[in-house]
Length: 437
Image (cartoon, rainbow, N blue to C red; front, side, top):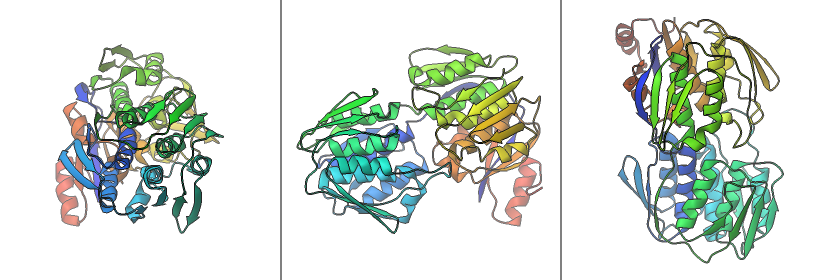
């Protein structure tokens, strides 16, 4: 079992480059199988979710050539199956994008329902509404979603709630449907726009992404393309928070500052100094973090994927704060882990009531999900003494070389494999504390 071993109390400084957007890349990889021609995709992150997706589309008969760590060439000319039901797909939610892609190209798809992090229910009712609106029939059996159509027909579809997944999935299916499709009450996240731009680079006709309404004129086929994925906004925000919580000075490069406005504004409100240029953001921590209230909302509101990181910041800020989670109902599971470090947080329903403390201490922690795992790393970087963070496979789903990047900024963090008493003893000598204590 791998874990992170961290000695806290060191301000971080320097420059770090973020990787490509995991959420955008997953949708783009699914879309890449919708043409018979070769597609080259650059700036993909080297994280486990991406690797699982590449393995799965390869199992369908798609040619997958990893040109470099961050680029891949895909050719789906000889794809021979529309059935993607490998058990590994249950480890990530974005597996459902294969439904829209396969349904769009072949009018048929059978895909295992998604898994990922246990942060709340992930209903697919709006996905089903989108597919049915395009005249596809759907069925769920033994954890497999089956969708079939004689022909996909464009339609006007109004989603009952804003759903990033349903927006992307229906958009994928609709680009090859007959006629015009109008999607209303859609998600506006940057990765939704990026996937729409990628589809357009392949010859699709998608307009309005990033607004409340997406308009799609169906085309007969898509062609090859070369495309670069946008930077990851959540990784960007996490490093911005790393600067704030450690009293540091970090410049985050390869970013799109506009995507970070909700995060930047909140950090300014909490006393940080933010400097932005075309492709970087510099965060200089204030002398003391100040309390603030946060409510998560769909983009362009405050992102739910940054809520655990900011709750951690607020736990060591001066004053009382309230964080309301309006997207996922189980996203406060990590607070039990923070409590081991001496924070003062009370959860009532969808709100966390925080009284900032002057200091926290290291502890043995378990990451319950991807973003919460990153938040626990931030807490450990702030804490006095040593911390061990287990179940870091969650963190590795979405953060590339997280420990290496943090070390480049001055963090005392190492990844260790603890599988035997001998290995534990070596790690204890290296890191200076007892495992399991």
